[in-house]
Image (cartoon, rainbow, N blue to C red):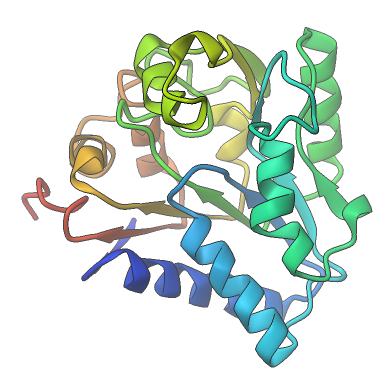
Length: 240
């Protein structure tokens, strides 16, 4: 696990962008696993800026998103499908037909998404990390070998996401469809970004804690190629 500690969020976003740009430049038809949430927004802004200013092209890139809420329409302002369109896809030249965001609420929907993923090999999986150590929506206690599945969201996660729903937890969906930890671990490379003091405990558990389902992200200690890009606040509890 390679850990890069940056001064602040802007520096972290630039560093993470450099990793993605290097891949897209060397392999224009690469497969990216993408994430939502506030952590990757700066990285996506850098991708859009670079595309507009330097012409870096994503026209042959395929993308597969980690997760989506269950029970809200694709075009809902808070859906992850809408998030990706607004924060990345509409700003670069990626072919909409090459973008994939999971959708649905049944075991069949999960199996169908997993089947799509089996047709490709994800070159780089981008991740954030939840305050409780979740990656994707794989909450504490999730088995490490699980594939795409329907998740019951914890109170902690719903509380953390209430800020996107008028600070009203009752508006936050109770379930999500998510790539499993087993699915995530199939990616050739993992790039995880985290910022802020509220992520420091999770970051410490991921990097220095035991490999245990109590922290889903600790599974990444068993992955052969992980780069973690964090700011000083998120790194504040690391002992090494």
